[in-house]
Image (tube, rainbow, N blue to C red; front, side, top):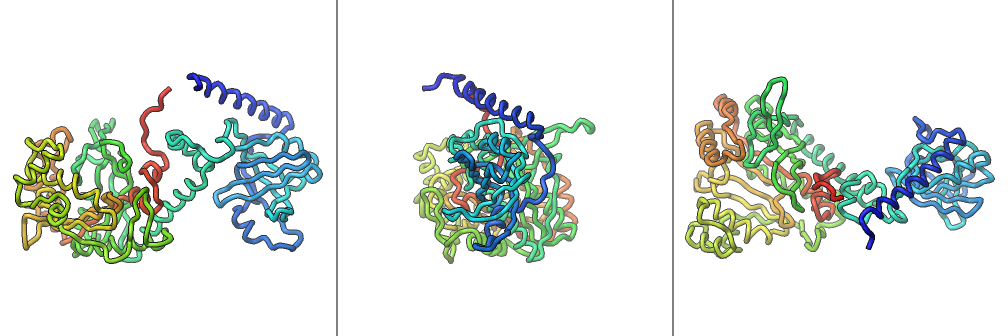
Length: 489
């Protein structure tokens, strides 16, 4: 077993060797970190336009060396750029004065190569760099992952995403897919008349959700501010202002735990539509997620860890109370039975309000059974202070959560727009929340007094949606730079 310090000593040895190569390059009168490079095109485009048997085809590419085979007077390089890989052939005969530079190249170096496009005897499309066709664009001073099979240490991959992206092609593809998914969501919403907006990241009141905020301080105004836990109350102000269909895709911040499904900084999409309700939002959610599955998954059955998620229609729509009865065996109205179940589950229910106990049992018994897309509808009203209650049964609120792969992916309401009821709900919600620094958003109540149209609101966790669509095991696999505990020495 290696002793502490041995790995860093070895890394230092490799860096010293590479710095010697760097000095040798400089002694050739070559700048190892030049500026602009002209004439490069994506490797995939070069390959696609190659015509076998046609003479005098030219090409130029730039990228990172991920494989290098030196066989004397020939060097074969696999170059990787954003589009893929292509082989570069370096010949002593063709390069002439640049051959010394070619011999100094190493794995990880970023180069440009231009010359004749052809195919080797093994059928590999290759750019043969011609005279003055080889350029060193950036010298790599640290040893790349062994044989470029990628970073094996998961923690190191997260900490050194800048290496992970080019050492593991599947990681690059996952983040390219993430960008495409977000683009598809934007296109979907804009095609239906929604306007993308931006609301404050720093807020004077931490509102719109029950969560512990991050606190910062504005020096000029000498006031504390909160990184937002939700954009909800600002987006609903826009409904009051007459923007009837709005959405935002942006970051939320919650000063809570780290887990496979949670990162303190995460991306949410929130949508609000005037004159709609939670059923409209349910249809919108189903259509949007189904579109993403169709576009980014090979079939409707998607592998997600050890789960297989079936996105075939119809998606189940089940009442909260129905699911509680199905999986816990408790009737939601029988609070004694629910508390007994909670105690057997190890929940400290004695000091909890009834509705909190009910939700604790629900989370413990129901959520792990919701693998295929399931809309959980009609939540107990006390859990939903921003939601309109059902006229047929005011004990329940017009709210749904969409669960996929045992995770909550979406949350939606028929929005409460009665200012008196909203103010009273806020007062109830704030009782006992001193630790979260939550306070009443009086300006939001003022906005409601001007009149907010009836509306449906929806939030979808982008990170979790990408997890499902790409089969990623952890939220850290779909966040480029996830928050991590400090590295150990």
